[in-house]
Image 1 (cartoon, one colour):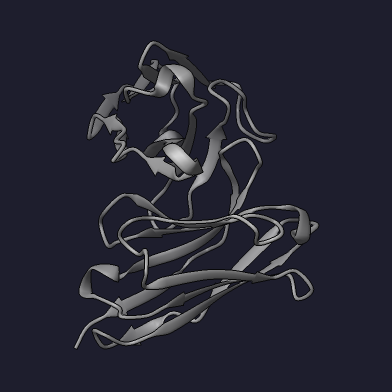
Image 2 (cartoon, helix red, strand yellow):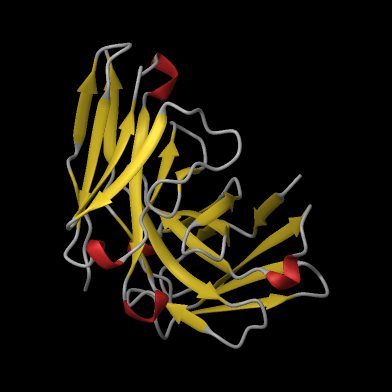
Length: 107
Length: 118
């Protein structure tokens, strides 16, 4: 089955730029989206169609997709951005596939 | 305001059944595809099932195929997940999530916990 690979953890200092990557051999042909999940809360969509932000998501969140790697970038990272982040694409027949998640620590 | 409210979770023995519900409000439910996604304790997100707006297209993850059935009632603005032959590994928080139409899930419910244990 199709797999999306994410690094388990990323650390960043406040105010710096955080980059979270997602790799998958079909990504060059797909739209990727990203979700933020804080402890005890439901996931929130932060990026869709590779680089679009839903209403209400701060401009410091951006996305890209090149080759077989998608990247979520958080510029000027704030303490409130500390969370788990999941990428998502799809497999054949429109089955949704999630990456394993990346824990972002702001320290 | 879009709202998705899951219910029906609880403790069930292995081999048992449970039916989850998701009540939708704040949008025209009948024109959106919907999904169930689960998250085992301390683990990542796992997509479970998808149903199109008219119920004509349905998909399942291999891990639940043949045991779970997704359905919807557009007149009642409700989504369902019938879960049979439950296993320990089905223990998770189950979320219903609206499909944006662009392969992303743009709104999620608060989740309902299903615990499979003897």
